[in-house]
Every structure is written in structure tokens, then in C-alpha cells.
Length: 166
Image (cartoon, rainbow, N blue to C red):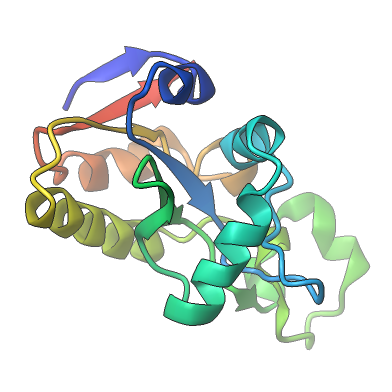
């Protein structure tokens, strides 16, 4: 696994295929929540992206797939909904321990979801014979996982997947 220092939006502007991490949550207006991290950066770069991702999620579910002109790939890291135990620490005060179906964007990243996403990304890379795909380190920062928790998963990525960190 090679980790490169790169900004995912800059790579996309250079014509590279990039991934954006997602939480699978679609708002009432049909757009996906892309409120932090690389998802927010991509949404600011391409204002239609939240709507396109929302349409993708409604049609295919919270899974890996192309969401914009075969140049941006959805990469789920969080559940669509979770429970109190899944919440980010600073959000727990907003909910009760018995609450369920809490929006996934308030949840921690899930290493099991990241592993499923990595497997799906590997399959997509092979199916479309992609030469390079850039993936920001998933689940860290707002996902609150430690790099050591996702590193073994990232090691399972095919050689065409390049891991990006700022």
C-alpha cells in the first residue's frame, strides 16, 4: 500500500478517477448529506454531486459505484442509520441511549462497511480495468477511526488503488 500526499479535489481536476467517502444518508430533497471532509470538498467542487449521489443511493443503496461521469466513485464508510452506541462522541448528548435509526452522518465510521466498500472497489477496478483510482483514507477524521483500524483493510486494495492523505 502506497500512501501519497494529495488533495482529492486537485486530483479530480487533473482528470483522475477519485473516490468520495459517503454515509448513505439521503435528505428529503433527494440529495445526499456530504457535510464534512472529502465529501464536503467534492460537493463544493461539483455542486450537483449531492443530488447525483442521492439518486445513486436511492437506486443502488449505500454501495460503491460511479456517481459522476465515471470520474467519481462513492465509497461508503458509515451506516445509513445507526443507534446510540454508533454515535460520534460529541453528538451523544443530543440523543438518548434507547434511540435508534439515528442519521448515519452522526455516526462513527464502521470498519465492516469500509471492508465491504474496499471489496466492491476492488471489483469495480477489475471490471472496468481502471489504471488508477484515488481513495482518501476512509473513516478517519470525522469518522473517528484510527488509521491503525483501517490500515489492514486498505492493504487489501488492488495495486491500482492509490491511498491519499493530506
